[in-house]
Image (cartoon, rainbow, N blue to C red):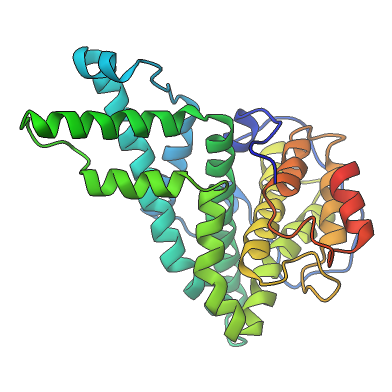
Length: 310
């Protein structure tokens, strides 16, 4: 896997992306459609917190001061602490997502789940996966976030010797954050790891998670004329993010011939979407560089060709 994404930052973080309508080819009718953005049946305070953090990441200003400057000049140190505090908030959200996602997927897999409840679950799972994709993209495109955390850790070590006042973020929490950010795709990997046991012991959970991508595809296919650009892009992100999370949770990945996720259909939709939504290029690149099994020998040759030539 590449060390970073060769793509721009804002499209994957942007909550709304006014870049025209998407037109996908017709497909079979789906029982459930994904309800993007304002059409969501319910919304929680946690949803608002996560969305607010994505907006804050757009304005993130990495501190480029040396450790000595950061410790001697109050304003740079305050900015550094603010950056680390923001990163720690994101880390806590991802940890919470990892704790709740398995149950959400299992609830979605239950045959007695009503259509209304299933739509709500589809929305929540999609939002969690999209958040992970957006943060990992931000982290890959902003390497100084790790530098900020390193500078802050040095400041904590230095100030501890001086017995200074307590800090907003403890050394233990900063160390945990540093380990988290050390991963190539920290948020997606965390979600994948959180789902590993669930998808291993409950095959229906794999199908349920794949249904998020399928619902996004069906929404694009059957409602393309009525979707605005932000809604269409939401569905595209839901497809890409679900592919990555499922690929990181399955031992053999999501690209195999036996995968319940219709990967070829989704990749083609993302490729076709570039005609009206240029940011779909970023989504395809994210799958290419952040997938766990995209280059495995077990991945069909035509899928590998699509990943590298779309």
